[in-house]
Length: 460
Image (cartoon, rainbow, N blue to C red; front, side):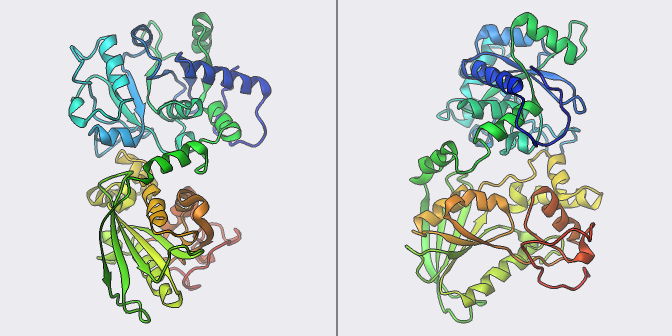
């Protein structure tokens, strides 16, 4: 059963027949078979073949090539793309749907021409083996990697995220092949054609909307505390590496002469450095004040008024004066929500031309937020902290620390004419807890919750 729904949200339990249809497709996918996924009618209104890398055969690949545009993409996660040295295809992504293309590639040890079904299958399956190195993958090549958004269909309702979520719901490694289906006349297959094709070839047909609803209601792939997610954290736990430590006096901490400073290397992303500033004894302690803070050169060094990062950092440091103990985790390498300083400056320019902070990242070929806070949790566990009082407005950080969070302490916002749109976007699109003065809200009737601003003055 196929439900050609449009944008809507999950409000009621799925129709039993629709649920059965999704579960049939998931089971087929888990068994290594191909499924067809239809996009929303008000989006692309197109259908893709989707098959997991583990089950894809030369025959499957040949079938996909024959009945598609011939462009076969590899859907996977950022961890694999980074490990294999596959960078985004362009820093200025102008695709209307923000499809996250990376540089095309072939698996060099087995590639002959790169375009044969067998060569493409070998490249696809090579993505499953994290023992492969970046040198094993040519750049460019004939297979087109797509980076899925970490939140899957809850973050972007495209075929990329559908394939990613199918892998996760089925309990498979997040590597799959997708290809857009076309008719014999070269035009894209639409819904009626896809229904007939699915029936003729006995291939399950589902929609992005139905898959998302099923995943939300009947799976835990969006739950940070699910066994799969928690096991990933546990697997990485032994790899957190303390590089150096010392004691250091800090100017803002008037009542404390010295704090301990530790520098860790990230394990989810080895390019990251996590600086842990520790006041007092935190080992074995509960409800320890903690802030997880991403590097922001423009806000902290240049005091840019386009964000409130510097203000939030200073607010936490000063607040430690009133605390017996606390931890600041400062993550170096997450400038611009993980896109780097050069791209952040490009994003600033795009914002000057009318895009918001989310749209700018997508335009540049990145997810709205590329950060991963797994390492922050590992550092806190290494410090022996039992639980934390987390100073943040960001639900992504709360989710990453999981059951370590005993309380969330919202951080005051400091709105001005230059950052007000940025703060509104964080509220609306990232669901940050930030609450602005009524004079700053688009809808003054909306009740304020959770957070007070640093000042009740109007935005000036």
